Length: 257
Image (cartoon, rainbow, N blue to C red; front, side, top):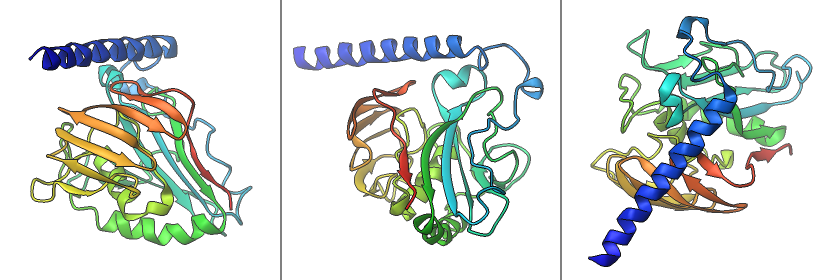
């Protein structure tokens, strides 16, 4: 009983410290908690994506994530994927959003690297060249095979993070490591609680995304309790924390070969 009590106290302390860190980051950012309406929030290009015209002959795949709008940005992120084949001069951007259509999977609703309602995106993955060219058909197939194109639940899923996790599982070459605050990435139907981790390079047991454990080359070791994830990354070493995502050296999957 004492052991369980200590674990409970430790869990609560981690939650409080992680939430404080997330609040501090948002305060420094000054945008996600600015009080502005969504209609006036910054949604233009962040300048992070390579110029597709300049890199016309280069295949490019990138995954971004940004804090969700308003107070939700303190606890979760919204991800999306962009890509272009060699010879193309425009990106295609795919993501899941809950409003505006029965089909929640959207194409090119915003600029490829746009601010997400005032929040600066973070680059999670980048691949260029022949390997990017080879994985794009796999990404397209994964998008088409997404199991919940007409369903959205902010918690525990399926949602925008569930969508990117599905792509990651189907395309292990992407080497996608979704942050711990990507709520919904661990959502799995109750009939299939075990399988590949969101990176496609590990294993996972998860009950509807509310209780589970993940172990993988990209994710390290991560536990999920009520959608709040915490664990330890191995390469490079870092803490995986709820609300914050990652505490340690920046990690970006990168391949320009």
